[in-house]
Image (cartoon, rainbow, N blue to C red; front, top):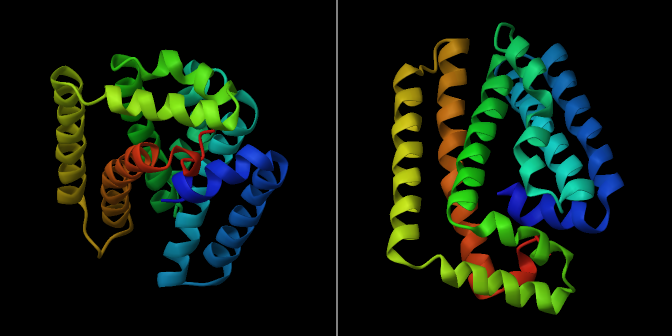
Amino acid sequence: MLPVFLQAPWVHFYPLSALLFTFVLTGFGIVLGEFVSGKWFSIGSLMIGVSGSWLGGCLFWGWLRMHPALHLPVEAVAVPLACVGLTTKWRMGAGFYLSCLLGTAFTDLMMLLTGVMSSWPDVVSAPMEEGAKKLNDISLHLFNPFTLLLLSLAALMILLISNEMNKRGTLNSPAGGAWLVAGAALTTTLWVDGLFLITTLLEPKLSGLI
């Protein structure tokens, strides 16, 4: 839930401090991963994965938010490291990051197909009150048969992929644990996007987008 209720508003108002927090997450993750074992190592590995997502989010929302086409490429800034991480003890964090990125790809694709992406620059560049009204109007326009069908198909695809990941996962092996984490992270996309939509309908100013 962090992208909706913590990172987005933080980056919006204080982008540099939010960006620097990436190093706090990474530092804690490395300490837990290198000097502690068992459950705490898993938490450290996850923190490394979270720091990758946090970094991409800070770079985009802090300085490039007017260019929605750059969202996915910027969020993918840590992909090379994550791919290498899949072959190391940090595979759980790498799996988390890559799965979150896949969820972001689904979200951006739906924004493109439903026309939300074309309105994005107008919303984020508008004054608070005007931006809130535009964001609310855009959200209301999503409630039509074609758009709801698209969103339902995307949600179904996410659930099917997540289910396949979970089938590959076991708690008794590092690789299996990475699959379970990846499946859970991908499913969380639905929660995050759902909460974002509800927020834009009820109180757009709290969405973190404007």
